[in-house]
Image 1: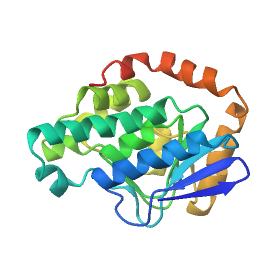
Image 2: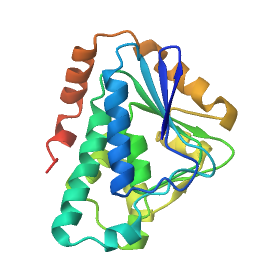
Image 3: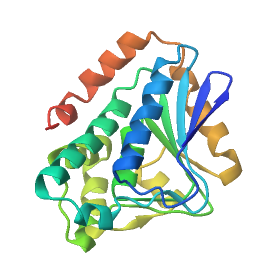
Length: 216
Protein backbone atom coordinates (compact mmCIF):
# COMPACT_ATOMS: atom_id res chain seq x y z
CA UNK A 1 0.00 0.00 0.00
CA UNK A 2 1.09 3.56 -0.66
CA UNK A 3 0.01 6.91 0.73
CA UNK A 4 0.11 9.82 -1.68
CA UNK A 5 -0.19 13.43 -0.51
CA UNK A 6 -2.19 15.99 -2.51
CA UNK A 7 -2.24 19.10 -0.33
CA UNK A 8 -4.23 17.94 2.71
CA UNK A 9 -5.70 14.90 0.96
CA UNK A 10 -4.13 11.55 1.77
CA UNK A 11 -4.76 9.05 -1.01
CA UNK A 12 -4.39 5.51 0.32
CA UNK A 13 -3.66 3.24 -2.65
CA UNK A 14 -4.47 -0.37 -1.79
CA UNK A 15 -2.55 -1.88 -4.69
CA UNK A 16 -2.97 -2.99 -8.28
CA UNK A 17 -3.95 -6.62 -7.73
CA UNK A 18 -6.90 -8.40 -6.16
CA UNK A 19 -6.31 -6.65 -2.82
CA UNK A 20 -7.79 -9.61 -0.98
CA UNK A 21 -8.11 -9.59 2.78
CA UNK A 22 -5.60 -11.82 4.54
CA UNK A 23 -3.54 -11.20 7.69
CA UNK A 24 -0.87 -9.18 5.91
CA UNK A 25 -3.39 -7.01 4.05
CA UNK A 26 -5.40 -6.16 7.17
CA UNK A 27 -2.27 -5.37 9.18
CA UNK A 28 -0.96 -3.10 6.41
CA UNK A 29 -4.35 -1.41 6.10
CA UNK A 30 -4.49 -0.70 9.83
CA UNK A 31 -0.88 0.55 9.87
CA UNK A 32 -1.63 2.89 6.95
CA UNK A 33 -4.71 4.24 8.70
CA UNK A 34 -2.68 4.83 11.87
CA UNK A 35 -0.08 6.75 9.86
CA UNK A 36 -2.70 9.00 8.26
CA UNK A 37 -4.49 9.50 11.57
CA UNK A 38 -1.22 10.64 13.14
CA UNK A 39 -0.59 13.11 10.29
CA UNK A 40 -1.90 16.41 11.63
CA UNK A 41 -1.76 17.97 8.15
CA UNK A 42 -4.16 15.40 6.71
CA UNK A 43 -7.63 16.80 6.01
CA UNK A 44 -9.22 14.00 3.94
CA UNK A 45 -8.72 10.28 3.38
CA UNK A 46 -9.43 8.90 -0.09
CA UNK A 47 -9.03 5.14 -0.48
CA UNK A 48 -8.53 3.82 -4.00
CA UNK A 49 -6.75 1.05 -5.89
CA UNK A 50 -5.51 0.33 -9.39
CA UNK A 51 -6.36 -2.15 -12.10
CA UNK A 52 -9.63 -4.09 -12.16
CA UNK A 53 -10.22 -4.34 -8.42
CA UNK A 54 -10.82 -2.10 -5.44
CA UNK A 55 -10.85 -5.24 -3.31
CA UNK A 56 -11.96 -8.70 -4.35
CA UNK A 57 -12.91 -9.60 -0.78
CA UNK A 58 -11.53 -12.24 1.56
CA UNK A 59 -8.76 -14.57 0.47
CA UNK A 60 -10.85 -17.73 0.84
CA UNK A 61 -7.79 -20.00 0.70
CA UNK A 62 -6.30 -18.07 3.62
CA UNK A 63 -9.57 -18.30 5.58
CA UNK A 64 -9.68 -22.05 4.95
CA UNK A 65 -6.19 -22.45 6.41
CA UNK A 66 -7.20 -21.04 9.81
CA UNK A 67 -8.32 -22.98 12.85
CA UNK A 68 -11.52 -21.70 14.47
CA UNK A 69 -9.85 -19.54 17.14
CA UNK A 70 -7.48 -17.98 14.61
CA UNK A 71 -10.36 -17.41 12.20
CA UNK A 72 -12.39 -15.61 14.85
CA UNK A 73 -9.38 -13.50 15.82
CA UNK A 74 -8.80 -12.55 12.18
CA UNK A 75 -12.44 -11.61 11.69
CA UNK A 76 -12.28 -9.42 14.81
CA UNK A 77 -9.08 -7.79 13.51
CA UNK A 78 -10.78 -7.10 10.19
CA UNK A 79 -13.86 -5.62 11.85
CA UNK A 80 -11.66 -3.42 14.05
CA UNK A 81 -9.89 -2.01 10.99
CA UNK A 82 -13.20 -1.17 9.33
CA UNK A 83 -14.50 0.32 12.58
CA UNK A 84 -11.43 2.54 12.65
CA UNK A 85 -12.45 3.96 9.30
CA UNK A 86 -16.04 4.31 10.50
CA UNK A 87 -14.99 6.79 13.22
CA UNK A 88 -11.97 8.28 11.44
CA UNK A 89 -11.34 11.86 12.62
CA UNK A 90 -11.27 13.35 9.11
CA UNK A 91 -13.64 12.88 6.15
CA UNK A 92 -13.23 9.57 4.31
CA UNK A 93 -14.22 8.64 0.76
CA UNK A 94 -13.86 5.28 -0.97
CA UNK A 95 -13.06 5.69 -4.68
CA UNK A 96 -14.14 2.44 -6.32
CA UNK A 97 -11.89 2.05 -9.32
CA UNK A 98 -13.03 -1.53 -9.90
CA UNK A 99 -14.67 -4.52 -8.29
CA UNK A 100 -15.61 -4.26 -4.59
CA UNK A 101 -16.76 -7.71 -3.50
CA UNK A 102 -17.69 -9.02 -0.07
CA UNK A 103 -15.47 -7.52 2.60
CA UNK A 104 -14.14 -5.18 -0.10
CA UNK A 105 -17.65 -3.78 -0.46
CA UNK A 106 -17.87 -3.46 3.32
CA UNK A 107 -14.56 -1.59 3.31
CA UNK A 108 -16.21 0.90 0.96
CA UNK A 109 -19.28 1.16 3.21
CA UNK A 110 -17.10 1.93 6.24
CA UNK A 111 -16.12 5.22 4.59
CA UNK A 112 -18.25 8.34 4.97
CA UNK A 113 -18.90 8.57 1.23
CA UNK A 114 -18.29 6.60 -1.95
CA UNK A 115 -17.66 7.33 -5.62
CA UNK A 116 -17.63 4.58 -8.27
CA UNK A 117 -16.17 4.28 -11.72
CA UNK A 118 -18.65 4.46 -14.60
CA UNK A 119 -16.44 2.31 -16.81
CA UNK A 120 -15.72 -0.85 -14.85
CA UNK A 121 -16.25 -2.65 -11.58
CA UNK A 122 -19.16 -3.93 -9.52
CA UNK A 123 -20.19 -3.42 -5.92
CA UNK A 124 -21.36 -6.85 -4.78
CA UNK A 125 -22.18 -8.79 -1.61
CA UNK A 126 -21.87 -12.38 -2.92
CA UNK A 127 -22.21 -14.15 0.43
CA UNK A 128 -25.58 -15.70 -0.47
CA UNK A 129 -24.01 -17.45 -3.46
CA UNK A 130 -20.92 -18.46 -1.47
CA UNK A 131 -23.14 -19.87 1.30
CA UNK A 132 -21.41 -17.59 3.79
CA UNK A 133 -22.86 -15.68 6.74
CA UNK A 134 -22.18 -12.11 7.78
CA UNK A 135 -20.92 -11.61 11.31
CA UNK A 136 -22.94 -9.13 13.43
CA UNK A 137 -20.62 -6.19 12.70
CA UNK A 138 -20.64 -6.84 8.96
CA UNK A 139 -24.41 -7.09 8.77
CA UNK A 140 -24.85 -4.00 10.96
CA UNK A 141 -22.55 -2.09 8.61
CA UNK A 142 -24.67 -3.08 5.62
CA UNK A 143 -27.99 -2.22 7.24
CA UNK A 144 -26.59 0.93 8.85
CA UNK A 145 -25.16 2.38 5.65
CA UNK A 146 -27.71 1.27 3.05
CA UNK A 147 -31.46 1.79 2.86
CA UNK A 148 -33.52 -1.22 3.91
CA UNK A 149 -34.68 -2.07 0.35
CA UNK A 150 -31.14 -1.79 -1.01
CA UNK A 151 -29.65 -3.80 1.87
CA UNK A 152 -32.21 -6.57 1.42
CA UNK A 153 -31.71 -6.72 -2.33
CA UNK A 154 -27.91 -6.62 -2.12
CA UNK A 155 -27.73 -9.28 0.60
CA UNK A 156 -30.41 -11.66 -0.65
CA UNK A 157 -29.74 -11.46 -4.39
CA UNK A 158 -25.97 -11.13 -4.41
CA UNK A 159 -26.55 -8.68 -7.24
CA UNK A 160 -23.78 -6.76 -8.96
CA UNK A 161 -24.09 -2.98 -9.07
CA UNK A 162 -22.18 -0.96 -11.63
CA UNK A 163 -21.58 2.76 -11.17
CA UNK A 164 -24.98 3.83 -12.51
CA UNK A 165 -26.99 1.26 -10.56
CA UNK A 166 -24.99 1.91 -7.37
CA UNK A 167 -25.80 5.59 -7.67
CA UNK A 168 -29.49 4.89 -8.27
CA UNK A 169 -29.60 2.56 -5.25
CA UNK A 170 -27.87 5.07 -2.98
CA UNK A 171 -24.82 2.87 -2.47
CA UNK A 172 -22.49 5.57 -3.79
CA UNK A 173 -22.70 9.35 -3.74
CA UNK A 174 -21.27 9.90 -7.21
CA UNK A 175 -20.16 8.02 -10.32
CA UNK A 176 -17.47 9.26 -12.66
CA UNK A 177 -14.70 8.23 -15.04
CA UNK A 178 -11.64 6.43 -13.65
CA UNK A 179 -9.38 9.43 -14.20
CA UNK A 180 -11.63 11.68 -12.10
CA UNK A 181 -12.24 9.38 -9.13
CA UNK A 182 -9.85 11.05 -6.70
CA UNK A 183 -10.83 14.54 -7.81
CA UNK A 184 -14.55 13.84 -7.38
CA UNK A 185 -13.92 12.09 -4.05
CA UNK A 186 -12.03 15.13 -2.81
CA UNK A 187 -14.84 17.44 -3.90
CA UNK A 188 -17.42 15.28 -2.12
CA UNK A 189 -15.50 15.55 1.13
CA UNK A 190 -14.71 19.26 0.85
CA UNK A 191 -17.74 20.58 2.81
CA UNK A 192 -16.78 18.36 5.74
CA UNK A 193 -13.11 19.28 6.01
CA UNK A 194 -11.51 21.59 8.54
CA UNK A 195 -13.56 20.41 11.52
CA UNK A 196 -12.16 19.58 14.95
CA UNK A 197 -10.91 16.00 14.81
CA UNK A 198 -12.03 15.01 18.28
CA UNK A 199 -15.62 16.10 17.79
CA UNK A 200 -15.75 14.55 14.31
CA UNK A 201 -14.67 11.16 15.65
CA UNK A 202 -17.03 11.43 18.63
CA UNK A 203 -20.01 12.36 16.47
CA UNK A 204 -19.29 9.50 14.10
CA UNK A 205 -19.19 7.19 17.11
CA UNK A 206 -22.59 8.49 18.15
CA UNK A 207 -24.03 8.20 14.63
CA UNK A 208 -22.84 4.63 14.25
CA UNK A 209 -23.20 3.46 17.85
CA UNK A 210 -25.47 0.56 16.86
CA UNK A 211 -22.88 -0.71 14.38
CA UNK A 212 -19.99 -0.33 16.82
CA UNK A 213 -21.95 -2.10 19.57
CA UNK A 214 -21.74 -5.33 17.55
CA UNK A 215 -17.95 -5.52 17.71
CA UNK A 216 -16.66 -8.64 19.42
